[in-house]
Length: 119
Image: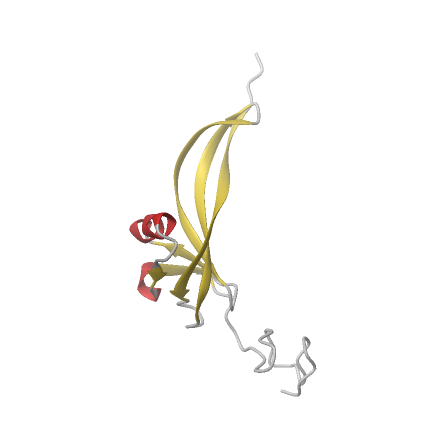
């Protein structure tokens, strides 16, 4: 008998919520996603379990994991404002940005790669 099964992460986009990014400090919209694990049999998901909530900053693109109760609250009420202490940074993409266009810049650059402004 041949049997194929596996665990895969499943992401569901919830929407945007207001909040403060703990990585860059921007008070902007955060993109909210619910993540769950799915048990698949013959490539068909049959059971979903566990998981949590992730948020991505609209300014610096850093990824944060939300506390479970904050994620549920934000999913039920899109008007919720999340604070920095309700999130833990998973991937920090914050860094120096161009003052003109907001694009990320690196120490060895003399001009912004996005708008050409002298740095």
